[in-house]
Amino acid sequence: MEKRPNILLITTDQQHFTALGTVNPKIRTPNLDRLCAMGTRFERAYCPAPTCTPSRASIITGLYPSQHGAWTIGCKLPEEVPTLGAALSQAGYVTGLIGKAHFQPLAGESLERQPVLRDLDFWRGFHGPFYGFDHIELCRNHADEAHAGQHYAAWMEDNGFAEWKEYFQPLAGEASAHAPAMARNAPYWAREQRAWDLPEEMHYTSWIGERSLAFIDRAQAAEQPFFLWTSFPDPHPPYAVPEPWASMYDAAEMEPGRLVPGEHDRNPPHFAMTQEAEPDFAAWHQPHEAHGCASHLYPEEALKKDMAVYYGMMSFLDREVGRILDRLEEAGIAEETLIVFTTDHGHFLGQHGLVAKGPFHYEDMLRVPFIACWPGQVPAGRVSEALQSLVDLAPSFLDAAGLGAPGAMQGISQLPVWRGEAERARDFVLCENRHNPVMPHVTSYVDARYKISVYREGDFGEIFDLRDDPGEVRNLWDDPAHDGLRRDLLHRMIQAMLASEPMKSPRVAQA
Image (cartoon, rainbow, N blue to C red; front, side):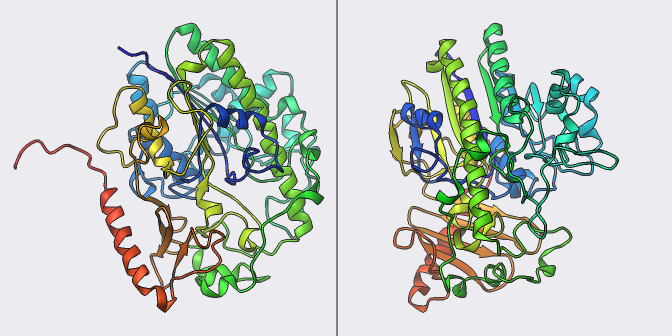
């Protein structure tokens, strides 16, 4: 029997697809560039949903959010849904998740809510199983957010950093002498001082790198193949990071995206509303606020500073990626390890007049960086335009392990494409956004050239020609000259949805 590979999934959170040094000379990510040189970079990879929980749940289930149940953030992935980790664990893999999970909400029956997050004795004694992972070490916060806790906080305390709470936004009755001040009259993620005085060695990025190395070492000692998800919470806002990363980039040299005058005139109404000082999105908040349904007017000077810190966050975690790659080589298992690097969804840095995220299915939001590396198996230094979806990760990893994917999974194995044995495995991707049950409720179909987005309500939508209009500034939905194209794309989209239906059990007889 052919030796089963180790599987290492490395993810960031909310990374723009251009935030890689190999495609963007303004950012320095030497270790991710090294990974590109060792493997194949895919330029047309997409998330199945542009928010954290549904996309991350799709990664471990091989299902779209409308099927696995965690259809948006604030929902919980049901524990009974079969997962990738469980299948690999049953096959003899040691499975682990280090870093951000976000399969559960900050309220309700959840291990990712207060006061459970701060019950550090519980976390010291609980390392799994959790959604198929035998071993977990979790953190739930981004930067200085108040919901810091879990294994990360226990690790800080156990390493003598008893005053860690002072570096995060306070809960009731707590002090936060070292948490960056929140900017006035600005989005929740804006910080007046972007340099965070949390010691660099106590930052969760350093912690995730260290704990990932420890997991790999344990798996080696046990002489078992491993599946490890190393899950970095950055560069997701808030924009705050320790030095030297906070000042690594000069804000004056940053070039944010910009709104093209008149581009939202052809778009659904919520696009133009983002350019108002006080837009009325009340009808969209049923019952909870929807990310991005607010004013996106933001000073360019502040955006440039945020962008510089965003790049600094990437360079920081790139260092830890380098440590992990070095350990694989030192242990002599680099050639036995399939590595995939990606993110859960994209990010806006001024493109189309937008910041952060929201129900705006531009490439900036749906398209993700994606690298596959397996020395001797995946071609080195190659760039491919074959369509990829994060929903394909589970079946692809199971294929690599020699197990095959169950029929209930909607993703398809990309392993032949990663290996260079097939030009493509799919002709389309689907991206769902169920952020609120009424609006915004939108699904996009993307193929090699076009993207069409259809809303649950209203007679509007979007069609973009990604070949002739890569900046997506000309919406063709209402253009009479493209009525035939709209009909054709709607037909293709329906067929894609039908083709993606999960077949949970095989047909074994005529009746």
